[in-house]
Image 1 (cartoon, rainbow, N blue to C red):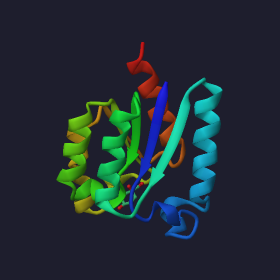
Image 2: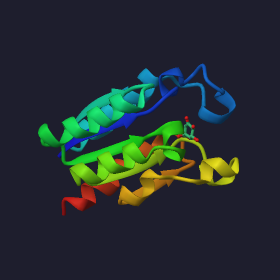
Image 3: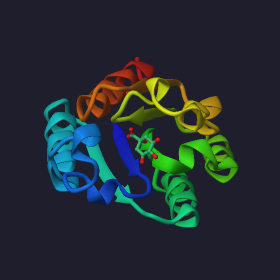
Length: 144
Ligand code: DQA
């Protein structure tokens, strides 16, 4: 399966950013962990991270033209604001799983709103980096 993992703003700062919430491991650690897991299962995975909403929209659109079969997306703060990301996911119709490292449902009220969730086949929250692996498992089942 051809997978794309999209990470939104400030996730490049993992390890530095609020380690009590997001942990001490870096963005590169996250990439390595997901890559190992995907490749062990025979999947091909590419990664995209940006702090810019339009760049994230472009990456989702490009996934369509690249024949991506599943998207794992942590839209970060744009989760709670972005109709553009929702529309991009709807536009490409690629099965997508929304992931959050932290338990957004137990945090501030504004983090409990998700625009992208409408376009996601599932949402995994509060499981740290392992949530991305769970998202891959969910996408693999969409291929059965
Ligand atoms: C996050 C949760 C968001 O509310 C926050 O803006 C992030 C990260 C998470 O992975 O827990 O940047 O998506």
